[in-house]
Image 1: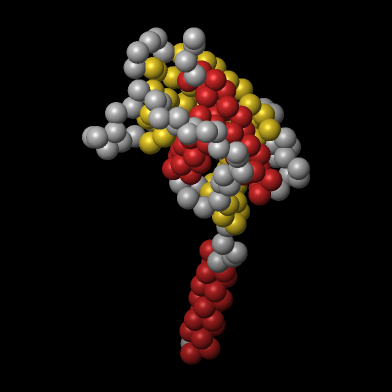
Image 2: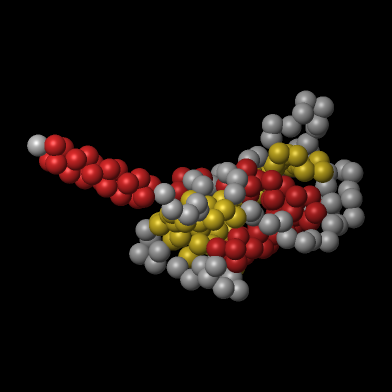
Length: 193
């Protein structure tokens, strides 16, 4: 009986060690969304932009980096994550890119009470993921609302190829895609004679 109890304890310790090993493993790799190097436009003082926090699809709000498969399913990586919440990272980088592209002051909402924007920009992504080849894919629409005239609503679809299938290349391609979107929005912001 004493031997039987020792065998049970040994088996219990073995199972506990095995189950504990299942939960341990390398931590996921985390990636920062880089801000591309851009040449700032000359500063303008007559345009003050309020940027609404970007809206990402539900699957893209998670820390795990999502891959959109050809069959339309979304796979979240267990090993590769955003370094900070995706909505915050995309909004912050996009605000810097839009400021550089327009030369205007860009503040994310909520803005201070003393800040009086004369242009409001909102970006809604319907698709925001890696594709099966590792490229950055973004689709959605943006709205530019001028204080003194009608607003503009445009759809966009951007696919940026990556140098490799790595997640770091995906993050760079995402940043480059956001830069291309900032250029399109800057055109919509410019006054029309």
